[in-house]
Image (cartoon, rainbow, N blue to C red; front, side):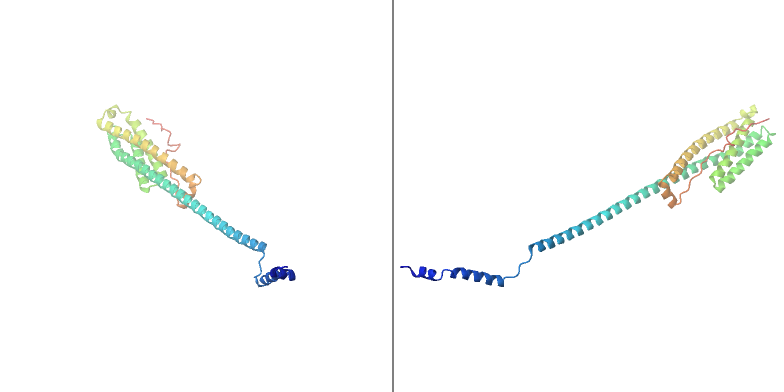
Length: 247
């Protein structure tokens, strides 16, 4: 004889399974609809890629700005360096010219005394004295005008006139023995040496200054700030020939 539980399961054996199936369908109907997993992953990937692309663009722009800033800073520093170098060379040119000017003025002041001393022994050499006096006057006038090229020509003429004056003095032994003439001649020789050294220094600085102005790319800065080439202080070809003195 079966028990009551067994009798009920025998009389209705499918009831528990059907109940579970009905309960599952009811829960499925009441549950929210599920989204597609593939579509969600795709949207997340697109979102991540967009963020990454934005960051890459911002980093690239930042790097480009930094590179431009660095280049500008380098150019500015280079320009300042070239400008300062040009200023330094121009000041050295001015200083060299000032040294020459001092020596030339001392020589010009010495010439009248030298001429007067020679006149006392060579009274008939009026042409030589006149040329020296005229050359000195031209040198003084050129010094007032301040043109280096004109000044160089005038000073070279005075140098040639002094050479003639010295050659004239050699023909008078008594003049050579004069103490005043000997002192003036020694002073003139010292001034000539100082002028030669000052001229060499000036021309060397002028050469460096002109090369800096002409060279690339420093010529860009020189043109922007109106730096002009300096003039050499040297004798012309016709002035380098020692004049012949005839008695």
